Image 1: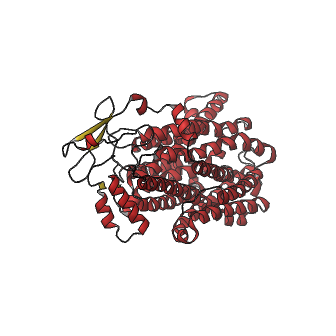
Image 2 (image 1 turned 30 degrees about the vertical axis):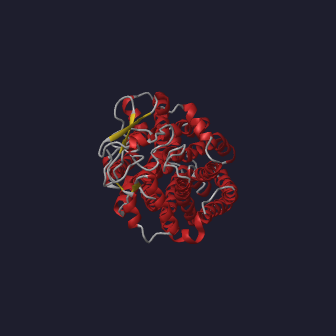
Image 3 (image 1 turned 120 degrees about the vertical axis):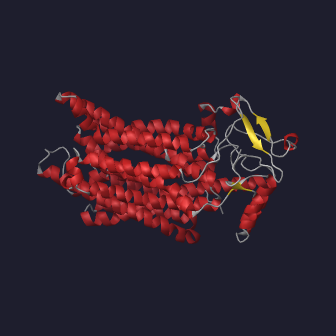
Amino acid sequence: MTNSTEFLPPSEVAKADMDSTKAEEVLLQSVRKAGAAVPRKRAVGRLVMHSMVMFGREFCYAVEAAFVTPVLLSVGLPKNLYSLVWLISPILGFMLQPVVGSASDHCTCSCGRRRPYILGLGIIMLLGMALYLNGDMMISAFIGERQKQQTWAIIITMLGVVLFDFAADFIDGPIKAYLFDVCSHEDKEKGLHYHALLTGFGGALGYLTGAVDWGQIMLGYSLTSEFQVIFFFAALVFLICLAVHLRSIPEVPLRYENEESKFLLEVTESYKYSSIEEGIKNGCLKSTCTEKKAEAKPGKCAVVSHTEDQRRMTLKSLLKTLLNMPSHYRCLCVSHLFGWMAFLSNMLFFTDFMGQVVYHGSPYAPRNSTLYLSYRKGVEMGCWGLCINAISSSAYSYIQKILLPHLGLKGLYFIGYLLFGLGTGLIGLFPYVYSTLALCSLFGIMSSTLYTVPFHLIAEYHREEESLKLQDGEQAGQHGRGKGIDCAALTSMVQLAQIILGVCLGLLVSVAGSTVTVISASTVALIGCCFVAFCVHYVE
C-alpha cells in the first residue's frame, strides 16, 4: 500500500499552510472533504536532485547542437538527405509521444509510473550519441573499402542522430509528469524553475565542451578523435545526472491486486483515500469508492474492479482524448509549437550559420584549406555563442521568479517570444561576430520561457479543474486526462516543429543559405508573440 510518509493527510497539510492565501485554504478544505491525498512539501535538495536529469539532458543536447551538422557534413551526407535526418525522429515522436504519456499514466511498475520510461529513454539517448559521434570511426575499423565506408558511416551516423533526438525529446514528458505527480503546487513551481536553471547550466557546460580544442590536450592524444573525448564526457555527465534524478523523490506506484488488473484503494481508520495519489484516476482508470466499500474494516483493502477495455487505452481512444481537450489546452499547444519552430530553426543551424555566413567558410572545402579552417573557426565561435545562450537561460530562470508576481505568466510568455524575435532578426540583418555573440543572450530568455511557462500553465489548468470539481462536490482527480498525457501533448509540439522545419527549412537553406534560418526564426517568433498575447488562456 502507499507509504504514509509520502502523502500526508489533508488535515495536516492544511495545518502546515495556515499562512497561505485564502484561496489555497479553501482548496485544501475542499480536498480534505473529498478525501484526496496531498503530496507533502519537498526539500530544496530533493527538487535540485530531481532537476539534475535536465542538466545531463541539456549537456548532451548542447553537444548535438554544436556537432551534429559538422558531423553529418564531414561523413559526406548528401544535401538531399539532410532534411530526412530531421524528419524521421520527430515523425516517430509525434505519433508515439501521447501514447507513451498515456501508458506512463497507467504503468504499474513497482518503482513508479514515470521512472521506468525515463530510464529506458536515457539508455536510448546514450546509444544514439555513441553512434553519431563515433559512427565514422566504428565503420572504419570493420570496413576497408572506401566507398562502403562512406555509405555505412552515413547510415550509422543518421541512425544515431535519429535515436538520440527521439529519446531526448521523449524524455521531457515523463520528467515533467514525474514532477507533477510527487509535488504540491508550490513545489511544482519551484521544480520547474530548478529545471530551467540546471538546463541552462548543462547547456553552457555542453557548449563549452564543444568550444575546447581537445586535440591539444592530453586526453585528446590518448583517444582517436575529439568526438570520442566529447562522447566520454557527455556519457559520464548524463549517467551521473540520470542516477541522481531516479533516486531523488520516491514515486507512489499504481498497484494492481492480480493479473485481472483490480485497483486497490486503502481505507484507514482516521481517513479514507479515494485514490493512491492526486490525479490518479485519469484516462481510462475511473474507479469510484462506493458507500458499501467505504464500510470496509480498518486497514483492509477495498477493491474496485474495472474492465479490460477500460484499462487498455487504444490509439483510437487516445486520439479521441486529445481531440476532446479543452480549447485552452489546444491554444497552449499551438503557442508552444510556434515557440519551438522559431527556437529550433535558429538553434539547429546556428553553428553552421556562424561558419558559413559570419566567418565565410565552407564545410565542403578540402580539410586543410582556408575556407574549411574558417568554417571550423566559425563553428567553435558558434559554440561560444550557444554557451552564452545557456548561461543567459539559467540567469533568466532565476530572474523569472522575481518577475512573475509583477508580470504574471502572460507577461513572461510575451516577453520571451518578443525578445527572441527581435534578437534573431537583428542577427540576420547584421551578421557580425561580436553583435551576434551579444544577441545570443536573448536566445536564453526564449529557452527558459519554453521550459517553464507552458508547464506552469498546465499546472494552473489542472489546479483550476481540481478546484472546480471539488466545489461541485466531486472527487479530486476525477477528470478525463492525466498529467502524463497533457505533458506529452505539449511536448509533442517539439516533434511537430521538427517535422515542419525538416520539410520546409532544409529546402530553403539549400536554396538561400543559412541566413534564412535566423530570418525564419524571427518571423515565427513574432507571430507566436501575437498568439500568446491574444489566444492563450491565463488563470486569474
